[in-house]
Length: 188
Image (tube, rainbow, N blue to C red; front, side, top):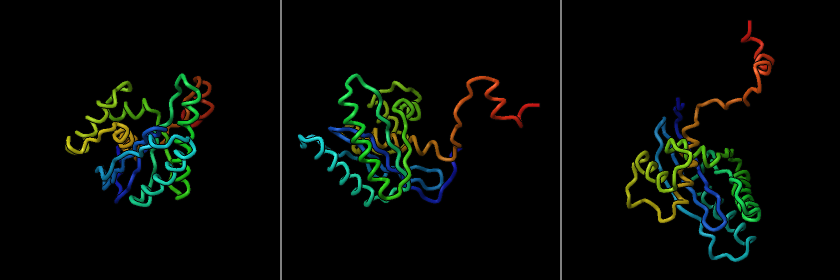
């Protein structure tokens, strides 16, 4: 069950090295409301280091504009190209550093978990995620962004909202013996 809050702002980020998406949710009580979504367009920067600087500046600007209480960010998934993965990890790290510089707590979510939380299908397409968000958050088709990276950022924020009030799950047990060792009070 989602725990009600007076008000909370969640910034969601979908990291990228060409287009980085973001979405901002305001939670009042247990009701989420989209207050912004957009992209950080990095296509005009040929140099990777200039992209990183731009990410840092823009994420700080978004933070200063919306004053989020928490950041939800999509964790990079392993691809075939190690260089691409390294660059994506740097982009994610720079966005995280910007949030940390403002003492904003960060939670990472795997892409599969975000898609599962929004659509019930971990293999859902970007379009399916965007369509479901549009229905759940009641924004018009006219407000649907050109780049689905923006709705992916919003999806990270919405996934985080759905986790509110749910206790963090301890690491699983490797066997019954492990369960008993970690829970002696539950065994008679």
